[in-house]
Image (tube, rainbow, N blue to C red; front, top):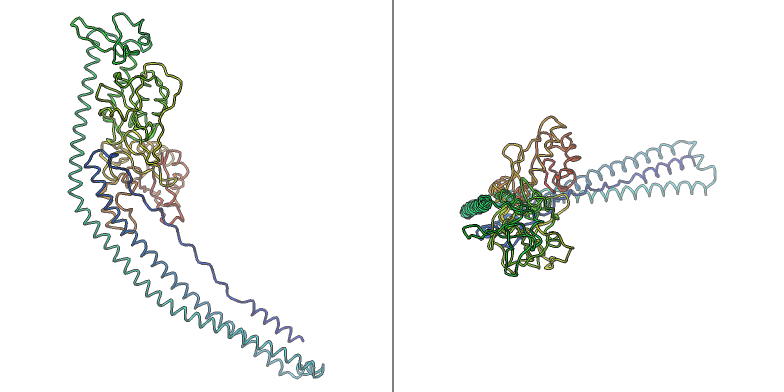
Length: 577
């Protein structure tokens, strides 16, 4: 029985020594698909710019399709390679199992026959009589049969593994075909990118010329308006008129000496007056606060536009930020948002609007989407999203005016104002404002220009080389850079910032499998930087510092670029605000 127990133990050892297949590593996730610009033509700076965006969108779809085919080929290549590797591993494992199983059987047989050949062991089997002998020998036969079954199973698994290896060879051949297909598609994309660059050259040149002309015309208009405003202020001074404080013009029966009520289409107006000069000329007299506010706004002409309520200058403004800043400098506090400014401002009839009044922009289905400072019957001054700057522009048509208020008059209890109800895009300051596609990423499209076609005058320097970004992003980067320099004794190393459409096409042509589809990169929105000097490595002190501190300055290494997310780019950072 000692022999039988020993054999049973050996058999149990063999029985539990079955192979366990390791689980495959999960495939790394890829970054989210970049979105194209969804804005309608009226959100752009002009017809030619809108047409260029339409053309660029067609290019994006075409190159995006090529990029998708490249990514499909890459996926199929990875799948085929993984299948080949798994099949080879399975065959090698089956070889090891069969070899081990055969060795155990051989060792068992040799031990059994060597032991039973000893007379003492035969006597042990015979000592219990014929029945015990038959029982013992029967158990040995059953153990040997069980071993044979297990060996046969191992051999069958080996045969299956050999078939799998043949499949692996086919997978390797398929992988080679996929690699060739990938190379062909990459070459196609590179060639098409080069052709696109040539095809777009004419459209880009035409658009650039139109934009430059529009900018020159805008500067002339801004300059004429600024000169006209300063002439008005100068004429008041020459006439010896000292603009009174706003409070002095609120009571029509107690106006300062020499001033009379200014009569509008709806009768005498509060908050403004007139004076008749010896020559008989009648001059409008505005409160000193209004004159100071309009002067501050005129001084901001040409400053870049940026989205967001907090853009109150001096480097850049949003439309409500410009209004709040200009009147704040004059001592008049206004709410931060355009809707709140309308809701609490003293209303006046639009036909009685005077210089310094605020005109609020619709139409009603978009809600209170913008605000400007009235200059005269036809024009206003505003930070315009479409033109990407503080400009003089035409007042909107009556149907698009949601209200006019006079900041020189006291605020009134909050009243209801129109809210966006069309369920579509968000309009602000004359343009469309888009939310980020995903948390931790830049919002993308802004202003009235397509991706990669933003005029240099709408951007601000970041303080490193000749790099530039949207002005709020540039200001945040400069603050981040100061903190970084204090920590490391040197500024942040930057390799890339704003990237033109032409540069995006060039990069796509060089590495279509890696570069973003032209017109979709946040570099083209002037909202992203690529870093160096250690920050290009996840393991560096520089990256660790940025990961900890950059979010406080509105900068993020987007989730898709982080470790384990499919396309690790430690050097790529985006402004999230």
